[in-house]
Length: 119
Image (cartoon, rainbow, N blue to C red):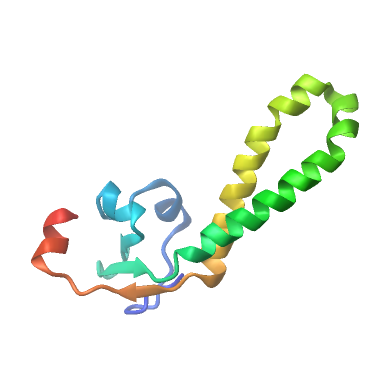
């Protein structure tokens, strides 16, 4: 998602491993700051990742259930059951990342004293 003001894309490490220049509570709400120009931005459609995670979760659980017997015979049923949760978490993270980068839009938020103080 490019910044609508300077049209620059943030670096992968900033998006993946930082709060993007805002507090934790603002980051959870979809706010971030542009890495280049410093403008306060907000992701406008946060419902898409929820939909993508739901669909990806249902499909991935179905696929895992379909192949559980053959996977269990190959690596053991206990190991196959243990690997289910990391598999589900990875699928959720991928679905969120893909939906946000493909369909996400950033909008510029006017900075008021309240939003500056709380970030």
